[in-house]
Image (spheres, helix red, strand yellow):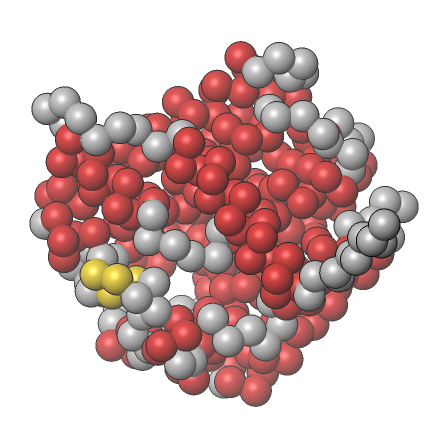
Amino acid sequence: MRKAVWKTLTFEEELKQKTEEIEEILYSYLPKEEGYPRTVISAMNYSMKAGGKRIRPIFMNETYRLFGGKGREIEPFLAAMEMIHTYSLVHDDLEAMDNDEFRRGRKTTHVVYGEGMAVLAGDGLLNMAYETALKAFRIKGADQERVIRAMEILTEKAGLYGMLGGQAVDVDLEAKRQSVSEEELTYIHEKKTGALIQSSMMIGAVLAGVSAKILERVERMALLIGTAFQIEDDILDVVGDEHLLGKPVGSDEKNHKVTYVTLYGLEQAGEDARRMSEEALEIYDGFRVKNDFLRGLIESLIGRDR
């Protein structure tokens, strides 16, 4: 009788596997392209199926597993988070915003479907995100109080005092063509990018039933991760490879945006992203429970190429 041979997956192989698992869940919540609104539904699904890292739902799921979560009530929130993130990208690519024609190696939604339909597709994804998250209440065994708290986090971090607020300040300062202070840029990074990563990890922790004290540490860790992630994005917009990124580099310069790189320079930006990632790892290492893949995911953000 042959002995079973177990192959240890590399981090990249495990990430690919987990990304595919997440996408299977995401696609199961997408609407069918039928009926009179099928064009906008097609635009929504086109945007969702453009690929990408799926970092936010992966962070959510791995945080949930870290703290002992084992149910399926996390699944609607995984899909909802990626819908919110995708809607923000669809609107960010519009002519009135960054006016980008490619994302993830494909033409952006407004290029394919027109600007009006792209606006509606973004609106549709945001609305469907909340419809989808609410389905967690119907899942057998779901703790209703935890789902309510998760919904509060999801809506708050995506809204006026979260991602939307950060994006609004970014657009406002760009329109005024005024210099951006360190405090303003920090606010934009923490809200525009950090808030959804915070939301992802906090929702995972809440649904797993962590204490308020642990949740505070998760929130701080996620803020550091999200801010470092955005700084790395700023760096890649200057020195990144378009083929790896799936979108043109130099869009920040084209749009006269003040970024972490323009404010501090490439070297300082890289050092600060590393420092924030290392502080996040220190918080992670302070937890009694462990998830080796989650730790590796945080480490992978340092000096990434896409």
